[in-house]
Image 1: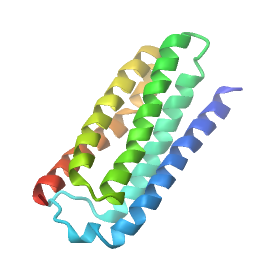
Image 2: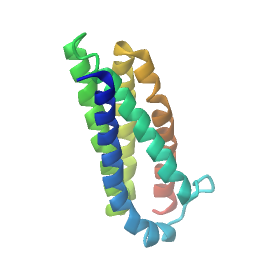
Image 3: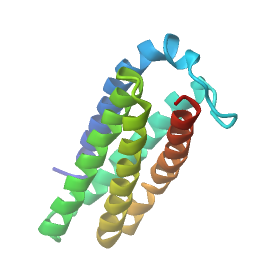
Length: 158
């Protein structure tokens, strides 16, 4: 399988996870989410879909570039892709905790773990392919912002 097919597959996986997460989010956006207190730096709702779409595409390209190097260092690449999979699962779980269960405390704790796993994924990817790791930086920065936002929402609504 060539590099571009691997990238297309990993982008499709990331976008699918994003889409499935958005299903949980949609009902709460209309019902529960408008009723909670949000900080002044909370972005408008329309910002999230395009930002997440771009981030999922960048994440998928990053993972595809790493997957393409599987023959070079199998153990390190398997470790990197394992961490990538874990962070992708945690990403989806945040939506379920925050929007599905409306559990701000668990969502706050979980997103801190997510941010740490993204950082570990970045460090592993950096050992394999610097360009692939750099594609994770916007995602890491957005999740750092989302962590601040989630924790602030938790404290505002306790």
